[in-house]
Image (cartoon, rainbow, N blue to C red; front, top):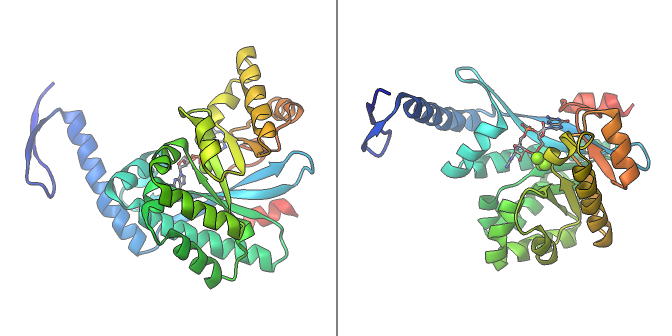
Length: 280
Ligand code: C2E
Ligand code: MG
Ligand code: MG
Ligand code: MG
């Protein structure tokens, strides 16, 4: 392939790059630049993914997911956005934005008497901030939102680093005492889940959608998921399955003892008003 010489933005370095690398870098740089503007102009928005309690058949929680439809770049998916945001540090700004949106929305539902918890995804960098507990408490207070309505999801990637940082664990424990619930997301895809569960104040496990998507076709997967559910039960933590797309998957997971499910079978991610309509 043709090699191009590219002047990297900011650094002033010259690198030899293939055209496809060049394209990736340009897109990255564009995302970074536009994201900062989008954050300043409050151009990001939030969709909510409903979560259904299997026993009561009620929607008892929603997961807040960031959405960005940029004028220039078009839709930038979280899969593309979040890693770039994590690397550039802009994840903290996305985190503050989501925290505020989630507290605001949870408080609105609380005031309307709609019994629904709101969870959002968090990244390691955000809990590195020693003021995280204060930031979250202040935001809850600002909207007069009960801490019990707030759930914070994090992946095992997060937990791995948390293990090394006692202050992160301390902050999580303080928030848990307030009533905030911590959820281990994408459970089963990381490396040391069992140790995280022992170390961190986790009240919920979310089985990753990669296990759920082919559960009907593979008997081994069924046994594995059954094991994950029993594991959660023995630890007295709730088990949620994500990525449930069919009635068969739902019925099987229910029979296996899952506490809650989320996925397109229940609903796609939707705006807050549609969540209310769905509850009616
Ligand atoms: P996640 O936390 O595991 O979120 C679930 C993802 O699976 C969401 O994708 C959701 O739309 C998708 N999903 C839900 N049900 C189904 C289903 O039945 N089938 C299929 N195929 N997919 C389903 P999304 O919104 O693209 O988010 C991807 C990931 O990006 C999330 O994975 C989460 O880790 C991260 N993310 C999203 N929003 C935020 C945010 O505000 N902050 C941070 N730090 N991360 C975020
Ligand atoms: Mg999540
Ligand atoms: Mg997940
Ligand atoms: Mg996942």
